[in-house]
Image 1 (cartoon, rainbow, N blue to C red):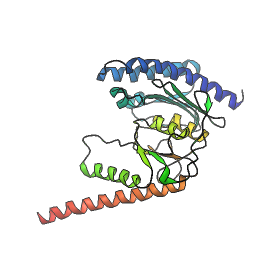
Image 2: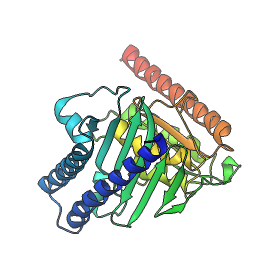
Image 3: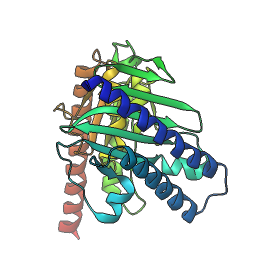
Image 4: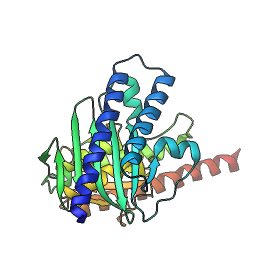
Amino acid sequence: MAENDSLQEFLTIAVDAAKKAGEIIRKGFYEIKHVDLVTETDKACEDLIFNHLRQHYPKHKLIGEETTAACGTTELTDEPTWIVDPLDGTTNFVHGFPFVCVSIGLTIGKIPKVGVVYNPIMDELFTGIHGKGAFLNGKPIKVSSQSELVKSLLATENRLEQSVISPTVDATTNRINSLLFKVRSLRMSGSCALNLCGVACGRLDLFYELGFGGPWDVAGGAVIVKEAGGVLFDPSGKDFDITSQRVAASNPLLKDAFIEALLQSAVRKLSMRIRSFNLQLSSLVTS
C-alpha cells in the first residue's frame, strides 16, 4: 500500500476513535461536574481510543496524557506512534465552556503525519494528512493572509497554579502585557489543540504557549497547521520540537515579526525578574 493510502486509512481510523470518545465527552459535558466525573471521562476516552487503535494497529506505539501521568515519561521513538489527549480543555469541561476536544496525532520517524482534533460540543472536526491538506468538517481550510502584526489576533495560555510564587506570576503576565501592545487583541481559549486549529482555519493569526502538558497537546494540531499553510516553530525562533513543551504558530507572513515580538517579550520578562531579584536583595541588605 502506498504511503498516502496508508495515511488516509490511519486518518479514517483516528476519526472513528475521536468521534466515539466525543460521545463520552458530550454526555459528561451536560452533567453536574465533580472530580470523579472529570477523571472518569478522561480515562474512559483514553481507554476507548487506545483499544480502538490497538485493534487495528497492534504493533504501533501509544502515548497518552492519562497513561503518561500514571506511568511516567514515555519516550518518543521513530516507530509509528499515536499520541493522544483524550480531553484537552479540562477546565473548560468543568465550567461548561464549549472549547473542549479530543486530539489524536500519529508520528512516523518522530514527524507528525496525521492529525485529528474533534470538538464534540461544537461538532467541529479538524483533520490533516501530511502532504494532503487540512480540513474542517470535510472542507479545506487555510491560515489567514494577515501580514501586519498590529492587526493580528493572538492566542496564548497562562498556565499558572495558585501556589506559584508572585515573581513568576508577574513575569508571565508582564510578558503577555508586552505582547498586547504589538497585536490587535488576545484570546485564551483554554485548549492548546484548538488554538492550533484556530490558526489553521484563520480564526487566529498567532499562537504561542510555554510549559503545556506534553506532546499530546500539539501532536494532532501540528499536522493541521502545517497542512493549512501555517508554520510551527519554537517561540525562541528555533525549529519546533514536539517534545519540548514549547510551541508557536502563525501564517508565514507573520513569522519573523512574531518571533521578534516574542524575543522582545522574553527580554522584558528577564529584566523584570532581575529587577525583582535586586529589590529582594536590597531589602535583605538593608534589613
